[in-house]
Each structure stands twice: as C-alpha cells, then as structure tokens.
Amino acid sequence: MKYSTMKESIIIFEKYGLGDEWLEADHDIIYGPSIDVKFNKEDEEKVIDLGWWKNDDSDCWSCHC
Image (cartoon, rainbow, N blue to C red):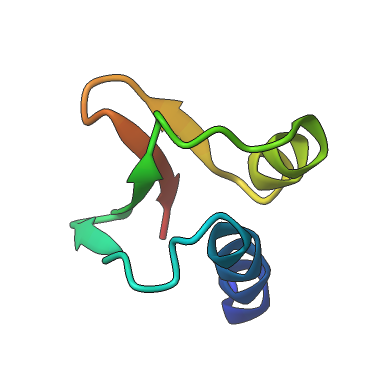
C-alpha cells in the first residue's frame, strides 16, 4: 500500500472518531478499525476501493501492505 493510499484511508477513519485507534500489522496485513464501525455508503465504497476488506476472521477491516 502506498503512503498516499494509507493517508486517504486514515482521513476516512478519523471522520468516524477513530483518530486515536491503533493500526496493527502482522507480516503483510494491516488491521484497521472494527467491522462494527458503520461507514456511510460512499466512505465504505472508497475504503474498499483503497484496498480494505472486511476481515471476518479478525473482526476488523484489513488491507495488504
């Protein structure tokens, strides 16, 4: 993931009060906010376009590094 893509993702996450949440990583996956976060439709589509997916195994949004 490019820095610019991550920055754009973080800007969306911050809109939902997630500015003080932790991003975690393991090997080649970045773990983001909980899948319980309710993004509006436009933001959810944008996050998906940026490479994030709902990771049901970890109960959070994830992306590849």
